[in-house]
Length: 343
View: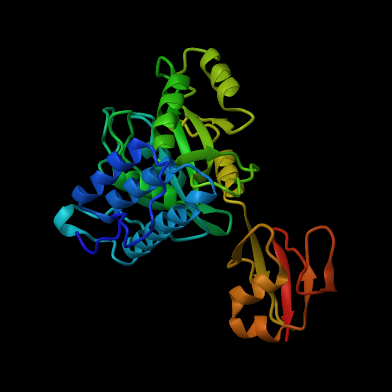
C-alpha cells in the first residue's frame, strides 16, 4: 500500500470541529485502498466534503498536497502489476482526446474512420476492453485519439476516470438509435460529476476556485443515418447547447467526419507556428504547436532555451497582416504564423 499519505491525524493538522460525519466515514475507506488511484478518488471525495471557509484552509491545502503527490507518483510509476494492468497512456502529438460514451455508441468505428487504425468493432456491447490509442492526421499535425471501454451508471472504473482527467479534451459519443440519448447523457454526466469531472464548452472559462476537473468537451451524436427522426437531435440540442456544442455524424458512412476533425482541432485550443531560419525557406510540414494566447517568447522557449534567453526581436509572416514585419517578444501569435527569431 506504500507510505501512509492519506490518514488525517493530529500529526498532520488540528482537525476543524465542524467537519460533517460523512467526512470521517469516507476517511475510513483509506485504510483499505490498494492503489494510488483509489486513494486519489477518496481524497478528492474528502476534499469535496470539507466546508469552504477560513477555518479549514490548512486542511484543504493538506488534502490538495496529498492528491498532487499521489498523482505525480502515479505518473512516474504507471505500472501496478500486482493489482491489475495499468491503463496509463502517454500523450503524443498535438493533443490527447479521449472518446467516452455508453455501449454501442460507435466509438471504435469513429476511431477507425478518423485514424485508419484497426480497433476491434462489434455489434455487441463492451467490444472494447481497454484503452486504444491512435493518431488522427489533421492537415500537417497529428492528434492522439483514445478509444475507451463504454461507461454505464453501474460501471465506471477508477483508471477510466483518471484517463479522462488527464486528457486535453473529450469526445462524448451518444447513440441516436437509443430510445432516449438525452437521458443517457444526463445520467452519465451526473455520474462523472460525482467523480469530480465536469464538461465545459470550447470557449467556456474554468472557474478559478474549484477542485473539479473541467474538460473541454464536444458532444457527438452518432448514427444519424439510422435515427428515427429529428426529435432526438432537437431534444439533445436543447439539453446541451449553448453550454456544449453538439455535432451530428454517421461513423458508419463517414457523414460529417471531416468537419468533426476541424472541430476537434478547435476544441484543443491550440495553434500552429512555423520557425523560419534567416535566409532559408520555411518548412510548412513540421509546425510547433502551442496553446492559443502564446507569445513570440513562448515560441522561442519551445524552439530552444537559448533563444528565449537571448531573443532580441522577431519577424513575422502571417495570412492577412504581416509580411516580414518586426514584432517584439510579447506579440501574441495566431494559427499558422511564420516566425523568424533574431538573437
